Length: 402
Image (cartoon, rainbow, N blue to C red):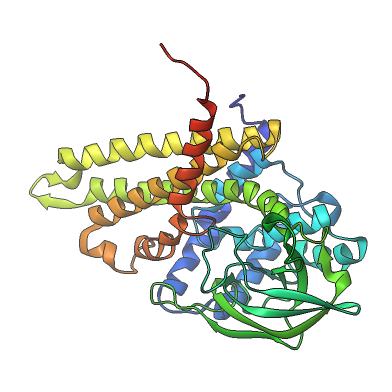
């Protein structure tokens, strides 16, 4: 594996870092003080215009649709830089869940679907959402699903209840996973279907309060009720019954995006922790940085962030080299390892800040609330650990070790 960062990518990362520091981090005080995301949209649209003028828009999306066309390794570096601010990915047009939906549409969309949904999505003219998780069923097991899409002439009629359909508030369309082939093998029962959100029967019940905050617009997590929601069968994405396979293709690169964003968060709060330790006076002539326990935390966090970063870049390299299927263990390992490193670094940064860390006068408490879900979404940590262990143990079948 070559760790060399090209001159082109070094320039891109420098430009992004400067933009995040100059244009985005100063905006954080607005939403930390209670301003809603929809109230911030006018300012964010202006920032998006600047990004497009800088030719840094949609870094990981196809060039033919207006993106930069960066590969997975290159976008991993971009995602790390943008992750330092909660607004980063949105302002640069590479935010989840749109990023994953763009990948699906690019790989499986028909020409008509690409023109109607993919092109305006990459351009940032519309948003989308991904409707998979169900209220009473385990999100870590996507073959367990109650939502159905029954054929009726040239249409599908969809019925079911979904939640954690992130960013559904204000989205133009959803990609819905629903059972279309109930008699097939469990892995071939579900399909992905495009559902415009203005379709009768698509009902947003609420934005789910997460850690006390319901959010709005892009920053919301919707609960959706599909009630006899009728869409044309031409809205099917990919082959019927292949939703599970498509979802796995979506989640592999998606976890690289998430994990490098988490590394960016680690870098941000690590910087805040070190500066706080350096400057916080605890006695005449003494600061927090003189305490060995604080020094130990800083040393441990630095090593763990570096280890996590190398793991993610290696996993991205594996996906590009041998494909996501062959890199399943590496993908699972980074998901739970990096999420836990991030949680540890945020928690220690909060502890070093003391009472200040509990307030929204810094970004730390916001990240503490909103990133706890990292150990749950995209498969709970425990599921990924079991999956890795099973593959490892299987590789030892018939082996003898002396």
